[in-house]
Image 1: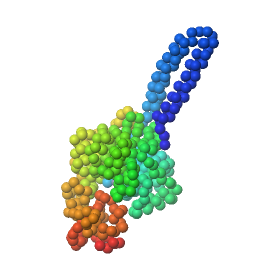
Image 2: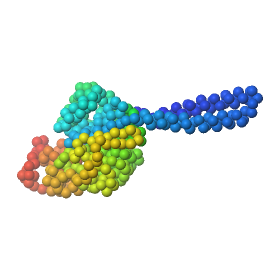
Image 3: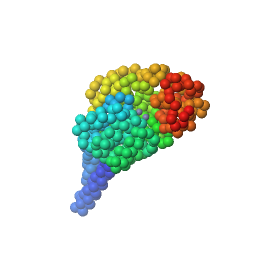
Image 4: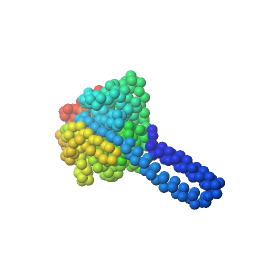
Length: 399
Ligand SMILES: [Zn+2]
Ligand SMILES: [Zn+2]
């Protein structure tokens, strides 16, 4: 944890004290030798005062040039997130993508000749963020492992726990506002403001990565609920580059305007079944005329920051076409679940469906609480219709 400005302020204060001491000694000297102490002391004091400005500017300039370079790679991991950041030979992996892309991520990191990761930050424990990070945990020594402060009951989480135990790592669960040094850059925790959301996506650890004047917003899979908490907490979230939350799913206009990005990046899989990115999200980006980069259209996106300006290795695709919801044959985008199966709510439904695994659960089934909100459909009606359309019964609650 560190705060550069604080340290610099302290240093300046110490310098100023010495300078004042020097002036007093001169006054004493001149009054002893019988000179006009008043005149000289004021001249000396003025000189000291004037000198303070250039010293500060010099230090500021030094601080600026210290923010030499930051490279951010938004890896093409299909439907998932994996971001590699590098500053002055220091490396951080933020999420690692899904199982299918785990070996690609490890290979990519090896190609960068990475010997050690300063940080692995796992935004949350969904498979499309966690799987590749487990690969990285096994393949590279890691200084600091950062995760949200919750546990879950999934196969992928159990493999994560096994890796952490085997490598004797202890994950850090930072609080909002905590800062971490990272090469010439630093990053600041902006979420989750609170825990215990029904939808684990809302518990994602989000950060603002800062290199000099350049800022990068990376918020995992947070959605409207967590966005509101961040805004209510008054956290500074303005950034030059915004990785769109949750693969281009929901974003509120208010939140988007607070980040006020100059560039947007969407990390999602080509023809993914979730309908990412959402129609309203890409429309908002288009309306605000923000250049857009997309991993599903362009593959891995790489940018460089020198602390003042940002340059991308490719042109923006500015492709504002939304994803098609595959699981439901590309139905309308307003709901996260296909309307035909999501015809009820948590209180009144007969069954809760996982539209991803195509399982039918009783509403009180224990595995329902670990189900992703985006995979859920609340269904009221005939179970036979579900079975005929390819859904199978959950083995534990036996609907
Ligand atoms: Zn995700
Ligand atoms: Zn998620």
